[in-house]
Figure 1 (cartoon, rainbow, N blue to C red):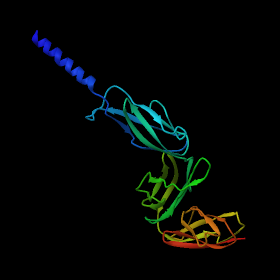
Figure 2: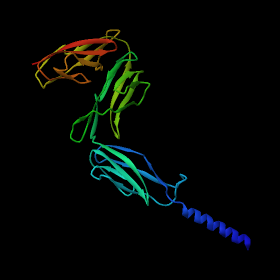
Figure 3: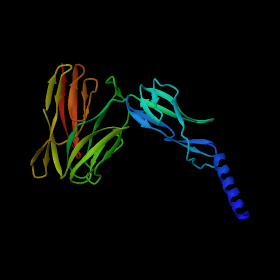
Length: 274
């Protein structure tokens, strides 16, 4: 009889101890959030912890946004970006609360140029990709994407979008900003290049018009290889706007030299804007 009473008392004490456990803190994951794009979502999760840091099996925090015009939050912790800006999202349970800083960045699209490229030359040959990140009003944003190559044994890519050949084959170079991404397919051919030509050698355009410069590479045996990618530059950016693919647009009247560099060889063309 005494044994049963002791067991009963122990069970009662354990139950009382369990009931006495209260939430001391709320652990929110992630501890801060950055949402790229109006209308995009991120989910927060909140765990109730006792004073020893142990999770409680019962109970869930309530969620609220300090500025619903920037971020709305539903009862399950799902955030919806409404406009660009910064705010706080609060998780509350009884007298315990935790705040999460949230930032919304207005990003609508991301575009890599050119969408495909042919990189010809010895290992280590380079060319540059360009990125255009735009907001919901089609304004270009000064955001730097995270670059990656699907096959680093074919080509590597730097933080600035410079692609460097490693071995023959095809790889995909991806630029990513938040959940948005764009890519360029790069075909790599490892072979020596003796010289290159740029066509046309001279271009005459009006302000606002453009001219696409093409590269012809020549192998060691004199064979012409068309469609090669190169690094383009302009001697006078005030006269010409030049993109990574070699398209030059007239900005103001004047003359500029367009230079293309591939595998240590170079070629020049003249660009005249009336």
